[in-house]
Image (cartoon, rainbow over all chains, first blue to last red; front, top):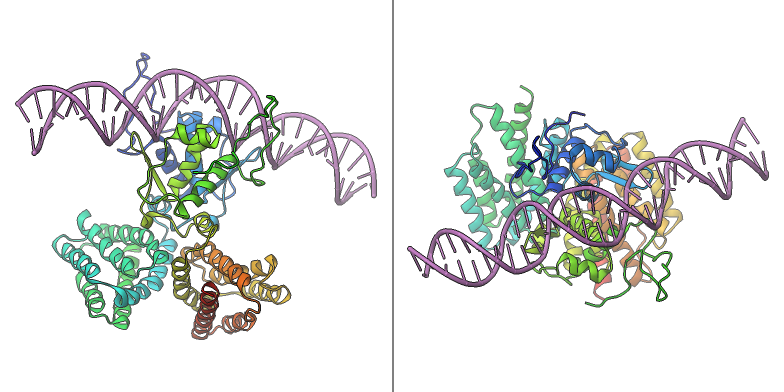
Length: 255
Length: 255
DNA sequence: ATCCGGCTATTACTCCGACATATTACAGGA
DNA sequence: TCCTGTAATATGTCGGAGTAATAGCCGGAT
C-alpha cells in the first residue's frame, strides 16, 4: 500500500520545528479525513469484503496519526456498516450487503473513483421506482410554498446550465423539493441518496458529451403536473424524466 | 435528566475494591452502549433538533465514562446524521431531515420507545412504493435458489406463527429474499429498513390483537406470482399484502 | 480420528491528562 | 452602527498505560 502524504497535524520538518498545518480540506477534521480515505479505499475495492485491516497501532502509525483519531474514523465506518471490529480478530471489511450504500458519505466515496456501471444502473432503477411515486404524492400534497421552491429551482436551472455547480445544485433542489412535498420522512431520507446520484451522474454525463440534451422541458412537465394537482400526469412525467436521464447516462458511460 | 445506572466499566465498590463488571448487554462495547442511549434519547425527542448537548467533559463525567468512549459514541451519531460537533460551539442535534432514518440502528432507536404513528405510516407508504416494484423485478430475475429460500421462509412462517421470534424472522427472510432477487444493490439496502419496519410493526400488532389475520395466503400469492415469473401479478399481490398489513397495523395502533 | 473444553497470546477497548486548534462572543475603535 | 482584533472555551488530537474479550491452539476425552 503506497504511503502518500501523511494526514498528521503535528508532523515536524527535518530540523524539528513543528510544521504549522497540513492541508486536508477545509472544515474537515482529521478523523473525518481518515474515514474519507479508508471509505474510498474500501468502496474502490482496494480492501475486499472479508479482508482484515492491519492493527490499530500499525495502521495509525502508517497514517502518522494518533490511535484516537484512527479509532474514531473506524467508528464512523462501523456506523455505516462498512467494517466491524472485534478484539483479537481485528477490523474486518463487512460483506457488501451490509454496507449502507444509500448513506450520503458512502455514496460520495463510491463515486469518488471510477463509478461502477452496475451500481449506477441500480441507482437509476431505484430512482425510477421512487421518484414517480413521489411525484404522484407531491401532486396530492404540495402547498404553495413547495411550488414556489420548485419554480425557483426550475428557473435557476434555466439560467445556469447543468455544467455549472449552481445549475446542478438547482437540479438537486428541484428533486429535493418534490420529495419534500410528499410529507413523508421515510421518502425524504432518500433525498440525499437520489440527489447524490443525480449530481454525480449529471456531472459524469457532462464530462463526456459535447451537446447534452436540454433537461428543462422534462422538468417543466413534471412541475406543471404537480402544480396542476394531477397525480397520474406527475408520475408519468417523472417516469419519462428518469428514463431519459438513464438513457443519456448509459450512452455516456460506454462511448 | 435522570441519572440511572452508570455505564462505566471500572467503577469501584464503596470499599474501593473494583467491581468485576457492569451489565451492559452482551457483545456490545461501551461506546456502542452510549451511542445506543444517546440515540434513543434523541429519537424519543428528549433532545430536540437544535439543542446543544452539555460539553464532552461534563457529559462523560455524568455517564461515568471516559471522554474517549463518549467521543467515539458521538462520532457514531455524527455518522448517522443525528448530531454535529464543532469546536467552541458544542455538539448540536441536527434537523430531522438530516437524520439517516433508514439506518438500521436509527430505526431500532426510533422503535425503542413508543413508535411515532406518523412515522410508521410513512414507512408503510415507502413499503407500498418499493416492495411491489421489487416483487415485479424479482419475478423477472429470480433464479431457482431465490425461490428455494422464499419457499423455505414461507414454510417456516406456516410452522411458527408471527407471535414467535422465529416466525417473525421467517417473515423478514421472505421479504429479504424478494429484495435480494431484484439483483439491485440499491434496493437491497432497503432490506434492513423494511425488515425492521416489518418486524416492529408486526410485533406491535401482535401485542394488541387477539386474533390477527392469517398472513400466509397473502404471502403465498406473492410467492406463486414470482415463481410463475409473472411480474404484474407479483406487483399486484405484493401491493395487496402491504395494503392489508397497513390496515391491520393502523387499526392496532388506535384502539 | 474426531470432537469438546480449557489456555494463552493477540487485539481491540477503555481510561487518563495534557496540549493544539478552531470558532464564537465580546470588547474596543473607526 | 459596523467592523476588527482578541480572548475565552469547547472540541480536536496526542501518547501511553492498563483492561478485557476472544480466536486459535493444544491437550484430553470420546
